[in-house]
Amino acid sequence: MSEPHGPAGIIVAQAAPGTLPAASGVEIAVPAAEAHGSNFPPFDVHTFPSQLLWLVIAFAALYLLMSRVALPRIATILEERHDRIADDIEEAGKLKAESEAAAEAYEKALASARTKAHGIATETRDTLAAEAETRRKSLEADLNVKLAAAEVQIAATKTAAMANVRGIAVEAAGTIVNTLIGTTPTSGAVEEAVDTAIKG
Amino acid sequence: MASGSVIDPIHQFQIIKIVELGQPGGVELAFTNSAAFMFGIVALVFFFLTFATRGRTLVPGRLQSLAELSYEFVASTVRGSAGNEGMKFFPLVFSLFIFVLTANMVGMIPYAFTVTSHLIVTAALALLVILTVIIYGFVRHGTHFLHLFVPSGVPAFLLPFMVVIEVISFLSRPISLSLRLFANMLAGHIAMKVFAGFIVMMTASGVVGWFGAVLPLFMVVALTALEFLVAALQAYVFAVLTCIYLNDALHPGH
Image (cartoon, each protein chain N blue to C red):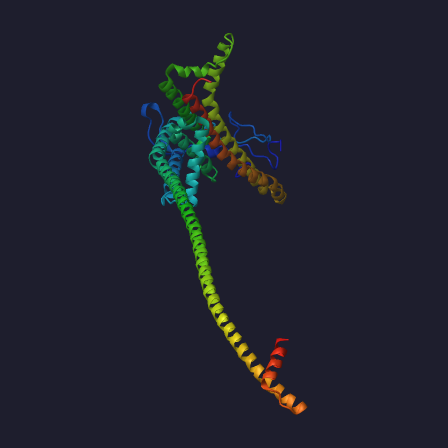
């Protein structure tokens, strides 16, 4: 590679004074001065005034277009988006507060309803209990009356029955005595004996 | 052997006169390919930005995202280096960044002319920055702007040396700013052309050469990727340094 005319070497056309030695050792061709006006275009001072003139015009145009049109436009877009996002966040915060207030109101209503329901339940229970008590009492009184009546009737029935038993016993005793000894006792004696037996 | 395969990596930087405008005052003026590319870049940037934002949609599409991204990227760079006060120079920094970036990228198109590969162009842009710094610095701060060259907290006997060093470093700024961009674009394009030239030369020398050409082909592919990186990076570096220098104009005195 180091020999100038090797197979892979770059051919040197015209080694001008401004020839640049390349890192590989290969000489890089720099065409003659008349081709470019100078050896090396970036250092050719003849082109400087034209380049400066057009650079000034082009860059001034770019600066004006950027500062007057393009950049304000992008800035507006970014600002609008920023505002919109801020607005949305604010709106979301407002809605959140609203929903929280609604939830709180709901909780409150629920609690009061619960208290009210509890009150109603207690009241109803008390009323029903009192009513049941009255009814129970009246029923008891009623039953007591009936019981008393029944007791009286039983006593009457018992007395009547006992009276009947004496009559039957007297009759039966008279008949038994007659059968046994063939004499009919006086009714007074039989009655006396029956009364003694009943009492005994 | 000499004919037909001459590789001239400098040819791509040639200025071609399209329309001669005569020589007013002995100065040669012409509308050149360089000027055509400059206006092409301006038109490309302007029409891209306006076309991309034509919908002004709340939720940006791809192109609008790109336009907004470039805006916000430069805006954050300006804010980061020069503070909120620096935003008054935002249109200038944005124009510089987008001009250099587009010029570098357009230069990557085969056969296209690279505007930023000419020293006079990068020097003019660098001078624009430095003159803006100097003029704004004096208008805003008056002689206080000169405190830029007087670092505080330096012993009195060292002060003259420090001032000299500060002045030299200030004056070297436009030189480094312009040379960095110019040299990067120039060297990159030459390197690409040289390696591409190897491929042509090797394949011309026969079957063995075809295999030999594989290596420089890989080099060219890698260099092309590198050059795209350099093109974007140099535009960014130019914009960042502009911001840093403008920060000196806004806040002189260390």
